[in-house]
Length: 107
Length: 120
Image 1 (cartoon, rainbow over the protein chains, first blue to last red):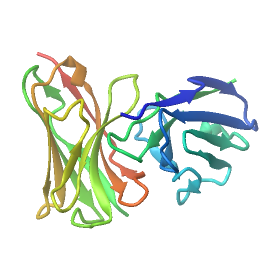
Image 2: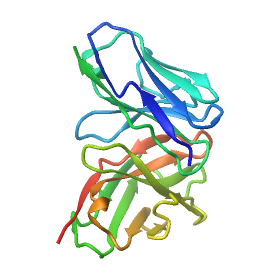
Image 3: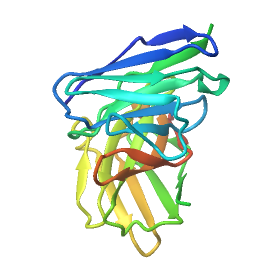
């Protein structure tokens, strides 16, 4: 199985901050990397697919980059509704493993 | 728009079989553009991919669960189902049905999730 490791596991930030979350794969996954946002008690929501493509309806303050084994999710200017847990997931090979999550909290 | 809805018992006894169904509305499970998936999340923990089924009936499962998992498709009802046998407390989780895209593999539509507790 491909292991996905996110850093940090938790992060405190303020509204308006620029935030970056990292995701590292245990082997190359090309660009098959997706990002999800999950709020308490809700299903995850797809934000970014194929490393850097913005899912329809997702605000442009979200962006993704990377290739191979190292990827990042950036939120350019945090909004109150962005405080949530974020997961990366590889869809390069099965099982389609997820990172352990990064909890983004209000400072 | 496409919506997915899980249904099934919220409580299952240890050693028994967990059975869940996902009803798809606004779209067809017979589409070749998607894989119909199950993903779970134990309380307070991260997401675990269980497996998926394609409209042809082809399946792919997480090796950690493969010996206990069955996923099936009912095109007449536009549903797909999950069966997980010999459950233990470790199988207690929120179970999500979801739609995985064929090309990039992203999961773009999720059900709301259903909590299943394994307890006697």
